Amino acid sequence: MNWSDTQVTVMGLGLNQGGVGVVRYLLSRGAMVHVTDLKSEQDLYPSIRAIQELERGDTVTWSLGGHQNQDFIKTDVVIKNPAVPETNSFIQIAQSHGVTVLTEGEIFVQEITEAQTQISCIGVTGTRGKTTTTLL
Image (cartoon, rainbow, N blue to C red; front, side, top):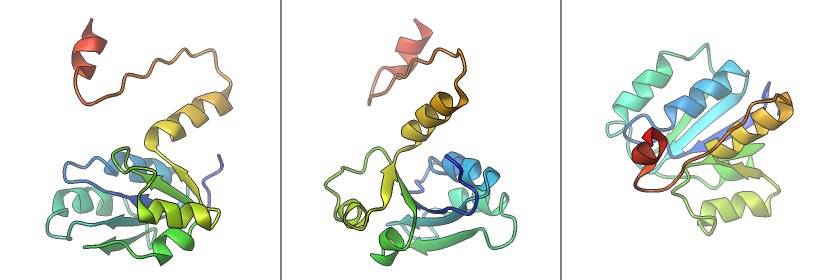
């Protein structure tokens, strides 16, 4: 996907910089990123600081302490945290307005597919056992 000048809403930045990686990736591809999270700026300070160190101009905007409907309507793509169910009301709003909804994992698979490389890829997901599984 060509992310250049694409409006992207990242839903769920996370306390442990979980969403920082996807924001970093999107910024490196020229996307215009809007981050929204239910938690406050104070709660998310380490993740916000990590993103602000990456910013080039007005490339990231913020809605913290709650989601706004417009953030899921006036955008081209929503990147949701995998923990957010498809039944979430904001995801439903995005989909009803024709907005593409993806996860970080789906972006990765798209990039590998579009690159048409001979790379083999195995994904290990779940709540527990990923480290043990990959070490074995």
